[in-house]
Length: 420
Image 1 (cartoon, one colour):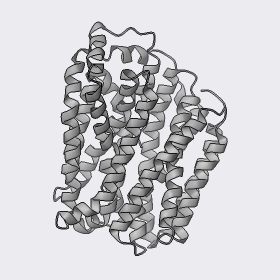
Image 2 (cartoon, rainbow, N blue to C red):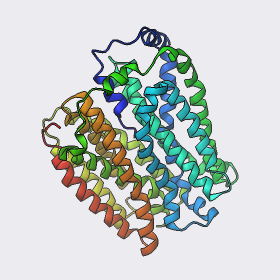
Image 3 (cartoon, rainbow, N blue to C red):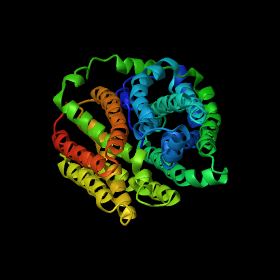
Image 4 (cartoon, one colour):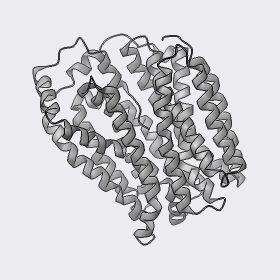
């Protein structure tokens, strides 16, 4: 799922900043075409997980085509996640310099190029395309919430639900369709992956009018807010690190599943098409946790019960994958889905609840996303390496259960009713 970023939260600090006449005119023009803007947001959001979800059901075929080891195969999914963290570092600066709409358009074009690069007959292109895909998705992740906050200030919650739902729906459809598409294209995994570049290209075409509408909008307001001195000490705050580590650890267990869940099932005898559908179901069920847990968190002074709930659900699901992966596949996918969705929703909510002001929240968001994605990138790689060394999924899953324990510990500290 997508994550609020510095761009979004900085905008909360801008209530007292009067936009430039050009920016005000651009906003009026944008809101004069709400349907076009809404369609653009939905299509862009559909791409925010699709390129990641399309690889997992086909990772076995990709590995066989290039003769990759388990460790090298894990890099196919780890490299994009790594660059989610790297891309998060540069996104706010690019938006201030070029404008959010232009950067989002560039991200969609970069995403389409990265998807196509991954299917070229070269292992270097496979990994290089992953770099492009991860960077593009990072830009979308970071900038989309801020755009929604800016253009729909009175309907930010409902619009966030729209874009989050579209993001999860995109991952679900892509995960379910990857294997059938491979068969439809005569057994070509490359054609199946390349097909999703069309989704990014269509989104870019539909988004182009927003760039034309926003010509007069500059990054002045963002620069003004970013220049304020509050929040510079988050990197030295123990509470900030607790929130950041919870963000990173829950991202780690999610990206291990994104990379390896279908493979865990197929290694136990499940068909690839069934494994893809179960994986898609896991993505879909995350909606329940992602919507419900943040709603509950906002009504509580401390969120410790929710930390216990989501980590317990994830740990239960992973334990189920260890003892009865095929027999209980649908149950474990559901339990994990609610836990995963609830954990990411809770992690994002903690960023806001633990911040004393909007600028501090923006800096904490940037810190948590950057460190969190870099930490998460190690998950698929480590799981693949341990699986290759042991020949079983028992040890990698046991290690993730340890991650759940660590997330519980830092989460209980992050969930206290305190402010940075």
